[in-house]
Length: 88
View 1: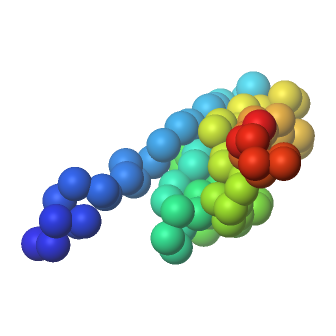
View 2: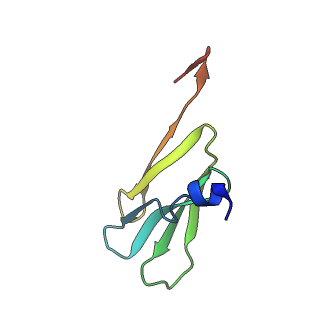
């Protein structure tokens, strides 16, 4: 394997949370490059996972998503911006 594959590989699932009913799970997974995608899947596997959104990682980065209710997610997205030569 390449050094990048050995050293820089991200986890397959970076964060997971169960819905209040326990019937669905939300999870973050690596996408292309540094991007991260959010999926919601049924625990019983009766339907394919649904893509909710993808962060491009430039400058935004998805940190986690949790169920607020059975039908709503709350996600933390962070980012850095160059403001007059200072990263904030």
